[in-house]
Amino acid sequence: MPSRTALVIPAYCEAGRVGDVVRQALQLDRELRLGLEVVVVDDGSDDATAQEARVAGATVVSHPYNLGYGVSLHTGYCYAFRNGFDRVLQMDADGQHEAAMLPNLIAALDDGADVVLGSRYLEGEPPASTLSRRVGTALFAWIATRFTGMRITDPTSGFQGLSGRALGRLVSDGFPEDYPDTDVLIEHARSGMKLVEVPVRMHSRRGGLSMHRGARIAYYGYKMLLTLLLLPVRRPSPLRQRDTVARTT
Image 1: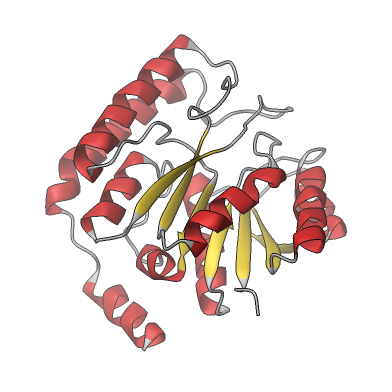
Image 2: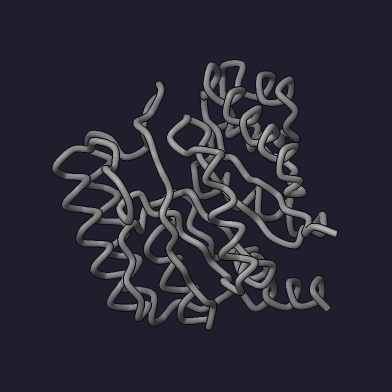
């Protein structure tokens, strides 16, 4: 019997793209019998994102208004945790991630990894990006490598797989509400999770707006560096920690 796997897709104003992403994932599931349930988290979109995802075959969980990428991921994690899924995959709704690469993530989870990071830099030519993004990625890849003890090439990748053990740790009050990247990887390593990077193909966005654009790139760098400096003194909420233990025992 295959593991029950939730494919979480955070989406904000991705009408015209999210439907194709959902259909490609479900087609792959039918062909390979992966045991997927596609869960689109609509982050308060004011277009047809939710309707398009639902028509394509996804379970849709909607926020009443825009709360941010990290909150959308956390909502998906909570849905998977509360509904007893064995593991979670996650990908973007904008067409950058190929559904055909999902088996790469699943294979690594099956081999015992807790956190699988799909990297665009391990094989082939990555999509074009700005100089500021390339510099930022290189800096945070160095930081992630330094503090996790393993080589990380793509710390901002939203194409990931999580074991049930990793999922249980993410359903907490401390999950970042906007940019859950390098800091989350370091927290995984600190808590004893096994991290693995696997090669995946990625493409340029097919439309919409990137959350890493304009002045947001500078804010991202500031926020991430501040978060990393505070990691040594951060502690989980004791109330939520007890609640999580109670749910898993």
